[in-house]
Image (cartoon, rainbow, N blue to C red; front, side):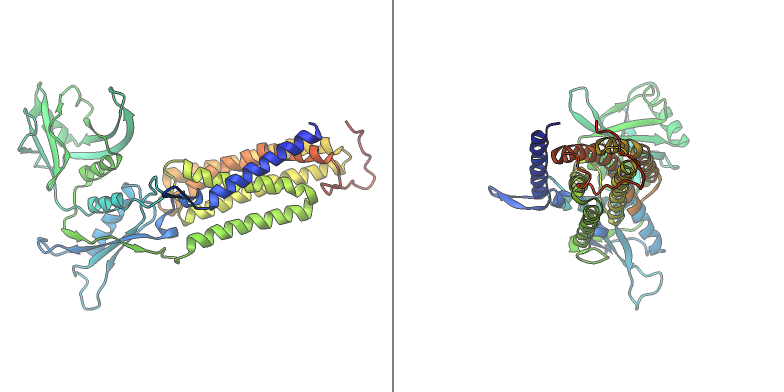
Length: 450
């Protein structure tokens, strides 16, 4: 590639990187709205950025004393996990003047998702807390007419499981969210006998809340797999309905306070400190690259900075990713994967040149030699993160999701972006060995320039 074209392309890349950096870190006004930076749109979790606290107090009309508050706390934790929350705090508020069976208040602290305006959606948060703490028993009503009122399935556990199955396209071209309800042997046998060969209507409630309306008919043919499906136009409602149909309500009735903001349990400025720490690692690596590789460190700097900026953008773009404290460690591991890859390339180039290759052939051999180690390290990290995504919970799940993204991005950065920047930079500087701080081994003969 001609030197002038290489300089032009490098300049374009540098300008685009600067623009991306501006939008990543800077907030500014756009008309009457304030633009939220890309970094500010990253969905962070409670243990990193704080969240909202709700206090559950036993209602005046609660019917019985709480036998074991720890069982209530554990039930709430299980339900919040089922609703998709990774890190949160649920604890009983003790009082030295009360005995071990006292009716403690319960405090829930958690963080909602970032909405389209870059703000935490507390409306969904409050709704999820209310669902997790809902009181009452699941009741079933059935009959041959819509919205039946005859209570059925009162002699045993009727539902084996209820699971949210995601979004799917409807016949009309819209979208709906599905919940599959699998009945127990008792539930299936009883319903089959009640519905006979005709259409049957089923309604499911929890207290005053209707979880499955009775205005849609089911038939024995559609019930052959011991399961039925219900749909809704709202994802959050589908998740909540699945949870309550499977587990019912709490045995005790609680009043829920208005939400109040709380900081991270590890410190108010943990999120900011994490960003500064990661940027410090990036700066240290870039400084090291300039010391070891002289002017060639520019390729390291450009690829590492672009890796960091693209990483932040991917954390926003990939749906469902929530960065907890574990996610911060995932970023650091992915960053060191990138450092390992680029360092492997640089060391290979130095070794190949020392043996007598020309600068151009040493660069090519260096990237070829680093291909396998880089792919293996990134593949191992990706495989481990995918396993954690399946089996882990809490902050480990955030670590896994963030590392999975970083593993792929690290391989792309090292093997594609870094190689492209190296080619442009060396072409612009005439492949000078001094520019890369390259040295021959004693007695090594130089190859003829290609």
